[in-house]
Structure formats: structure tokens, C-alpha cells
Figure 1: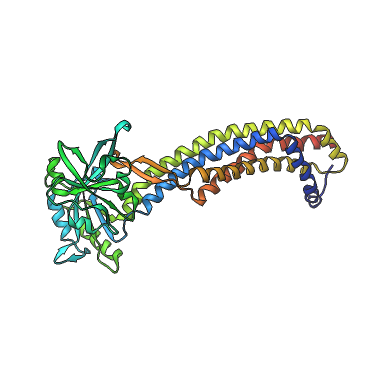
Figure 2 (figure 1 turned 90 degrees about the horizontal axis):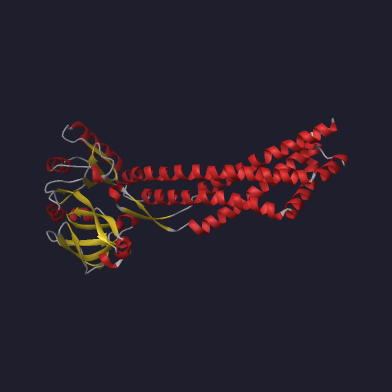
Length: 398
């Protein structure tokens, strides 16, 4: 029985009431589909929350008016090596703020070190050597307990987040690093929490302890204003024209965004395939559930045919049932995922195998992506049962 399209759409609202009642009568089967979709959404949101949180922690880290210079082939500080000659040439470069006749630049050296954490084993963290210029380049620096390290001594100040992981790095404690005792003399806090996972000491003391005198890994410099972009371009041109300076030059913000991209992509690439595998199973479950439901409603479908309902409308209602169940699972999954994942404190491994602390965060785009995946699951699971209804009705009419 063929019915005009406009008439078919008029038949859809009252018939959907029958479909909704059918979903309630088969509530256990409907709940199974909804829970499966919810599981798919939760798995995807878990990985996306980690990826979004890590990327946000790195993207909001670093200043746009501070340049970071590394060896050209290096992708991170642990893989960079700078000589004293290169540091001197960089300090004389254009585009850098001069203060009291001296460039506001900091040559820094860092090492990945480990400290015992009781029953939790050992934890890696970054021990950074710097001088007074390096401290001046850390905007918003506050000493929340104790004092700064004294140049030339084996003293360290520890980031607030790093110290919060245990009492081993609390002010007043002594830690053994490179065969030497280091006194923890203070705790510091910064606007960017990522920087609070390091320990700082005098650059000369760190170099001497590890036998790396005259060796550096990075140089940070304050770009001259008001047009810091022009200052950065001038500094990049200066570096490119000197064959002795085979270095990369970028802002601190750009450097941390680049560091974040690899881990972010890894988490996303893990989350989507795993969610896709679960989605395939959910599609099969949805298809079987709706097929059984349609088979059990054969008589009622025949009655609808005698009452003049279009086969297109009945098939559309079957597909709508699948989409409703999927949407319900998606909404439940996003609510549970938001409550369970957003703001959770996470730890991952950064460059140099150091621990990076960050907070999971669910971005609106991730929530929409999870809902879209759930609706795709519902559409795929409902297409075959709807197609069967459409063909059976058309065959009966013929």
C-alpha cells in the first residue's frame, strides 16, 4: 500500500506513541541496548578526558613573550645539548630584553632523577639547574614555604604538586642525588601547575654533581616588547644566519603545545579504536534486539497495515526506536562520564620519563563526538530491522 510522503509524516507521531509503549513493554531488552551504548560512550569519554586534560595543561603552560631555544634536532630538553659558546652567542642576540646591561636570558640544565616513595617505589622527576635570571623568567613565582636555594650550594626548592605526592621532598628533608646530599629548603608555586612538578637548584651545583660542567640543554630569554612577535622573528633570523647556532627558536607556549601533541594523539588513537570495537558489538546487539522485537510484533504490524499505515512510517518508527535507545544511552553516558572523569587528577609520563600531573577534562567537542558515535550505533543497529519491515510490508501489499 503506497501512501504519499506528506501523509506518511502525519502518521508518524501517533505511531511513535505505540513504539514507545513497545519499548517499555520490552524494558529489559531496551535497558540492555541502552547500557551497551552507555558503555561505549564511557570508554570513549575516559580516553578523551585524559587527552583533553593533558592537552589543556600543556596548552595553557608557558609564556608567549619568553623564547625557548634548543638544539635543532631535539624535540625535548633531555635530547638537547648546548655549548657554552652557543649560550654566549644567544645572549648577545637581538630581540632580547636587556636589564642593567645584561640580557634577561637563562641557560639551564636539567636531569631526570628519582626519589624513593616508600611502598610506591621510586618516582621520576625533573631536577632543573638555573640561576637568578631563570627565576626572573618564571612569571607568578611564589615561595609558599621556606626560601630559595643559595647559589653554589646543594639546595633545592620543590614544586608544590611534586611535594604533595609524599613527605620525601618536604622542606627540611634531605635527598640523595648523584651521590650527594641535597637539602630541600623551600616549596614554590606558579600560575602554571605543570611547572610545579619540578625541583630547582643552582645550575652550577647540578652540573658539578653530574659531571656536566659547561653543558646546557636550553636557553630561555625574555622577548623585547611591545611587539614580541617581531622580536621572536628577529631572534630566529639571527640564529638562522649563524652556522654555529643550529638551534630551534620558539615561544614557551609553542614549545609546550608541541610537547602535548604526541601524548594527546596517542590517547585519542587508543580511545577511538577501543570504542569502535565495543560499538560493533553494540550494533550487533541492537540489531538482534530489534529484530526479535519486530518478529514478536508481526500481528500488530499486520493490523497497522489493515488500518492504512504506510510501510515507510512503520520502518521509520523501528529506526526511531533504535535512535531513542542510543540517545538515552548517550545521555546517561555523558552524565556519568562528566561526573566520573571531569576534574580527576591524572599522572602520565612526560619527556625524560618524568611524571606529569594534570587534571582530566571533558571538552564540549568530546561530548558531542561521543553522542554522535552513539547515534551512529543506533542508526546502524536499526537499519536492517527497519529494512526488513519495509520489504515485508511491501511484499504483503504486492
